[in-house]
Length: 127
Image 1 (cartoon, rainbow, N blue to C red):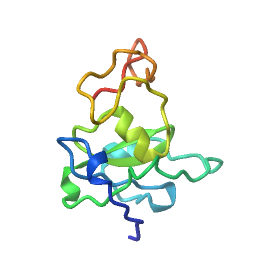
Image 2: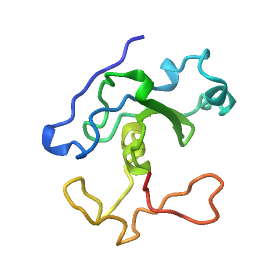
Image 3: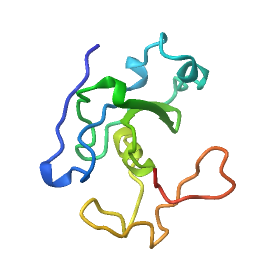
């Protein structure tokens, strides 16, 4: 399987994470796990997305990845990534004021609330 590989700048890397892998609808493998197969396929009218900044990198151990769906797009991320980081890998830029990988306080401004399935309200993009 061919994938474009782009490395994070060392200063942009989250402190406790090394890498993530994104997959696009064109690279989606129909032979994935039953849980992934249960998710709806992206509709053909969705245009391809480019990860935000340099959010797409190669994962050294694919077993450390999980697949999530962001706006219908399958995205493979490292276990423990935040929703915000998954969205960046999927090419969705979520506006935020207080979250930055170099800051310790997050979720204070409430600008970056996202909708999570089966959640009764909007949530900050925490893991």
